[in-house]
Length: 293
Ligand SMILES: [Zn+2]
Image 1 (cartoon, helix red, strand yellow):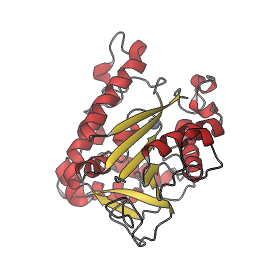
Image 2: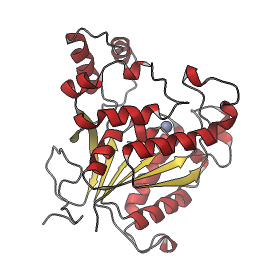
Image 3: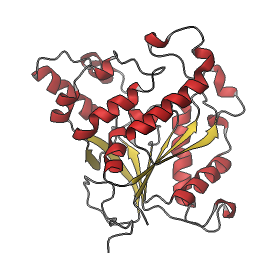
């Protein structure tokens, strides 16, 4: 059984902003990498001034499919699936009410769709967002709920019998991408090298606007120093969403590789025994995809 990593994301571009370098690394190491995108990103606005041209907004769904295809190629993703819902838009926006919006999806139905994909792809490792969605977008929170429910149901022969033979993934992780610790270290690394850091203001605001949520608990750090370029290119492929001149790209990859070469994760469920701190998402799983005994 080949080693397979499956990442569930809310919109086209999320696969590039969360865990892209990890996926590129595993793809290079011969792991099958599968991405599920829950919505088409239809509610996306033009976030890159260079793309703010006549006709672009009208073609958003088509453009976002093209951008995603390009990003998946850069990351070297083996297979991609749409879950088939509509982008709900940001909280309290008009698009929230659309009947096909992911935020309004029946949880059981959406879970069944993801269970069918998990049973067909047979990943040992599943990646998704934490309880608050990584950030509070209704589709991200829904992605968390559906992923956790599908992880629990996929191995149960009594659930969704139409969705293929039962299969139980071994590990479920949450992305822990946006931690204060990470931002602070990159900020300090940049300042120490005489680079103007765009994070200073953000870190200050972070202090003031305590939203009451605890920082993610990082249990796994994957060294992606050699894959930061692929992450950058995958992000830039999302031309309507990502401004290549934005502060996200202000700190050179060489600096990031020196001061914070990791992508961070929280182990949420595991059916295999693993140490408290991991450096490999397949820890406890052998090269044939079976639990290490
Ligand atoms: Zn998103």
